[in-house]
Image (cartoon, rainbow, N blue to C red; front, side, top):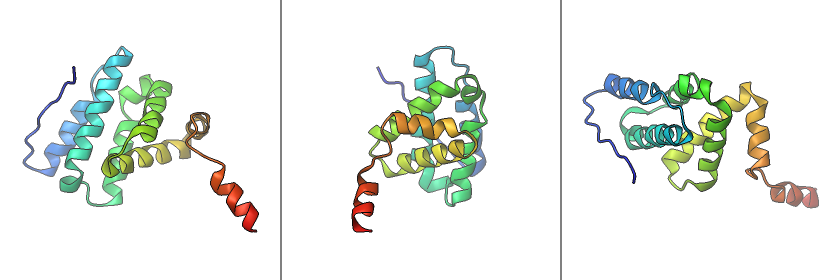
Length: 134
């Protein structure tokens, strides 16, 4: 059963406060972590057009997750779940956020890109085509 929360936001500050609340959840099981990540992505994607107008806003949103207790306590699991989301997600708004998260995390933690490679997010097809042309 999916758990959905409906939000009625009046201003941008309320958006950031709600996002902080979502990320403050204490998650001691993989199921609770998954629920928190689903809530985060659904909330941000739902309000992206209203409150995330610049790349700075996307960066701020991404860094809130990466700086959260949720991420700090479960880095490997959260990274892997975000990578799986990249492979499965269809929504452009959610994909934008996922890619930003992985880029920001990967800049400071090479393990992120190694995990992405292990999961097959990088393919050799493009590289092979370029070598044949050159």
